[in-house]
Image 1 (tube, rainbow, N blue to C red):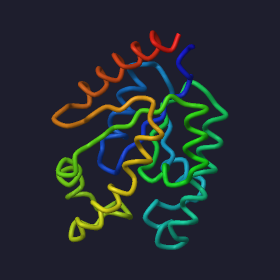
Image 2 (image 1 turned 180 degrees about the horizontal axis):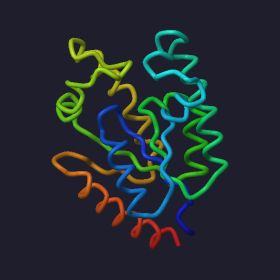
Image 3 (image 1 turned 30 degrees about the vertical axis):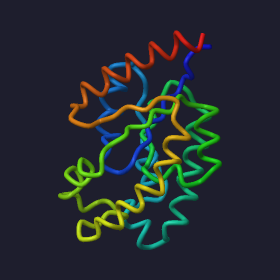
Image 4 (image 1 turned 180 degrees about the vertical axis):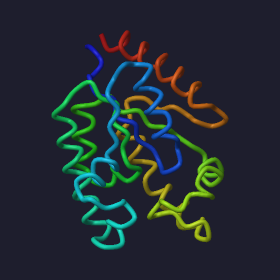
Amino acid sequence: MKIKNNIALIGFMGAGKSSVSKLLSERLGKTLVSTDACIETREGLSIISIFKEKGEDYFRQMESRVLEDLCRQSGQIIDCGGGIVMRPPNLSLMRLNCLVIYLESRPEDLEARLKNHTNRPLYNAERLDKMLKLLESRLPLYRAAANITISTHNKSCHEVCEEIEDKLREYENTSG
């Protein structure tokens, strides 16, 4: 079996999906698309504004529509929003149309990466306990969706990409 033509990167906010997907798209010669960027373009609003003005449920509906559209195309690295796994149809769609790579991060790494970010609608530095509960609720979904899991702990984007490329070769050899 040949590797599916799209690669979807999933993981919690701060896992490094955007940075890794950018580098990976360059290394593999695939088009980079971000579900969040697609939503912002369609809506003409930032993700934070969509959450504030239209709510999380509306955002998740848009996220599902964008994923459906992206899965109709091929040759892409899809940088998925951290909550894309919250809707079961998204999991099925990704598994059917993409090789799904879960970037797994430790909570302390996520906290360190996120502490200076103000553009994350579901992150609040004063409510670390809330973030940890959200992460805990999503972990089984990330793991269930993933074809490949890569730990990002103590690794640069280049190291993560090298590991992904190694896993892609292994996956192609064992799936054939």
